Length: 445
Image: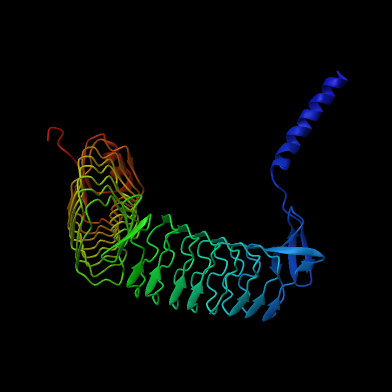
């Protein structure tokens, strides 16, 4: 009996202890002067914080005799008085948000030992005018140098293989950047809003390009790739990705009013035409199967769009802010719309939805105040939250009996709307619960 009791107690103790063991304990924090740090598994130090107020700072190679190998997450973020900093030899990693919003930081020395720079590491370091990248650097994280408005020239080392999304976005003063032959991956919207950039050469080593890396680059007139580039091509100044037959970038600076997407293109990439407001007409090829996120967002000059029958997907915000768009026909191959697809298309007065459509996404037609009537297909099963929010011009709509899900606020702000529903349908119940004007459709009609 005693043995059994002891066994039960041991099991209870194990059950109580195991969850605690499963949760990794927070590392102990140490201090050396104005620096706090943690000791990493390999016995090196990662600086976790700084309590001083120096304007010019040289970080020591050791803290309490322990070699400094990393600058940790947010370690120096918002050190508003810091203007100059020197990092020690032996440092290999700069963590996420390490120097975030050090807006007075004008100069930093990176040792050759650094191999990675984390996401948002120097985000909003507005005064940073020059930076020399170390020869061993392999990766730069997302938004690492975003909003560094005084950077004018960047030379990246031959060791670099990847640059993550928006790493140099909104570096408004950036005039020149040299990409190395080692670079294989360019993240989404990498140089978005770099308005001083006029020319760039993309090396043959690149095998992957994300969403339009040059979105809203107001001065970029010349994107160069070699004629034999294995994955990229330039046709009439427009950048394409060969492996997925994707239109990557229609330069924001182009002033043509019309453009015909070449035959064979299967995908309009994310942000491909974002804010290209000069375009009034775009012709899409029959080969097209998908339209990416924000593909035409902000194209305020577009007046109408005919989507080919093969289009199966339309991403979120694809036509958001196309205020001049008055008419669009969606193809029978489409089964759903993305979230915010036509958000803010105030000029949209006519849209044809296909019989194949089963889902309308979250806020798909939000603030389409010009819509007065829309015919929903019988196959429709779901209307997302806020789908028609702010469609103040809508006066009549029929909700099919097959609806199984109507999101919150789907018709919020549609003050002049009368909804026709089937008797005992989900739509009738929804209208009743939300105080919407509705009529019961004739069952024989």
